[in-house]
Length: 168
Image (cartoon, rainbow, N blue to C red; front, side, top):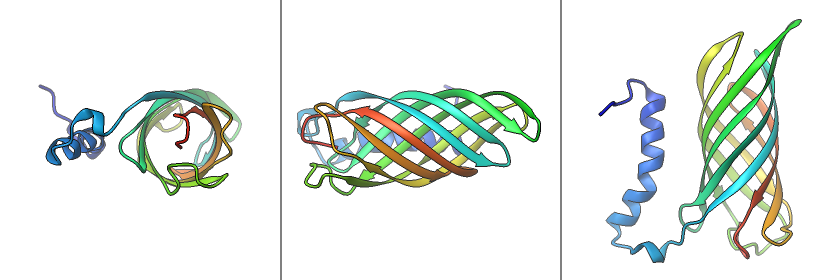
């Protein structure tokens, strides 16, 4: 079995294993914490040493009442001075929703995670992600959200995601 040799690899393993270990240690049956895998799409713009624009897609899973875990992949362009090139990004993101049952029209949530990105100027780099978002009113099984985050620079994202009725 291959084990990661850096902090990012261990962080990814911990983020994936924590929800499973929590359910097992509390003796909960799988039906007590219903999980659904739901898609999401994003358009993102980030500034820092390198400016990037990405279109990203992925999925999120509810990992309890307040927490959602998302796995995302994006492709786009990177710009630095007068040069440009292709850019790629993979992210493991956790969201903590303050209003998981849609009691209010808008829902605020915090973001944390790890991202790994490639651009021709900085090659592959991993970064921690910290930010916040606001989900707008739901329309059936879908909603829009606006997120801002710090991940080696400042990032703004426009997100649309599928939801379970009555939940964020």
